[in-house]
Length: 261
Image 1 (cartoon, rainbow, N blue to C red):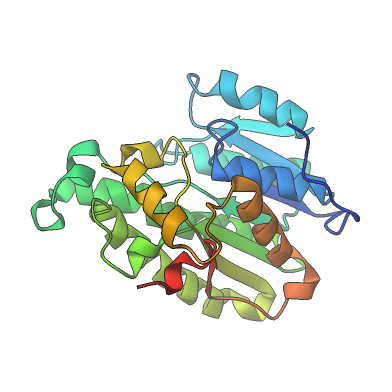
Image 2: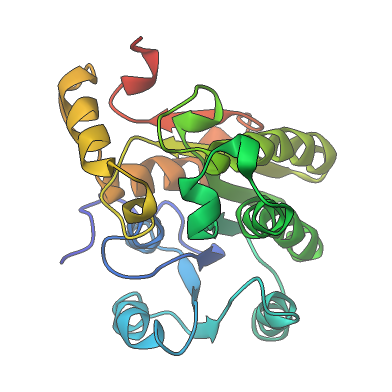
């Protein structure tokens, strides 16, 4: 699959970390492709040894000089990634956080019945890991930078079967606002990107997701589902100096679906 066609290397000279590529259908892959097409240099992570064969060829396609394992639930792995970036690059311009997880029984069950362990596991991966990445990225963003995370409409409205993930995404969006306020004086911008429904591996864990996709296609003003490249290009735009006065908000990339009752 060729990189998106662009007319200028608007992000040439920027270096960034992209977390969350599982395969070529991942939102993180769409973001990585867009950043690379615009000239940025990338560090890429993969979840574990099982995931590596799927991600390694994509990292080669992106000419990524850094490819490392990262399971944010494993003590020390996140710090190891940032240590290597610090050693090899010495600085960082952007981070894309595109990971979320919930134990299946917690995700499929009512929020009312969420076990403590399931709730904490969901929040750890889906929200706290972004806060931790911001903490580790801050000293490397010496000239300012951008932090991105992925959210969903289910953070604001009750979406059937989204359940505990809606709670986690609401917390994540709040974290974006607080991080933006705290890091803004250093020129670090923080963004939540809210794509419309996409047929990704992560989304497959949500019950009746095909019905949600069909509904979005029919009801969105654009009458089309968004693609990972749509999300990637919108995200990459926010890393450019042209967007230097935008921070702390949620950008919907969903064909307008969020405005429809």
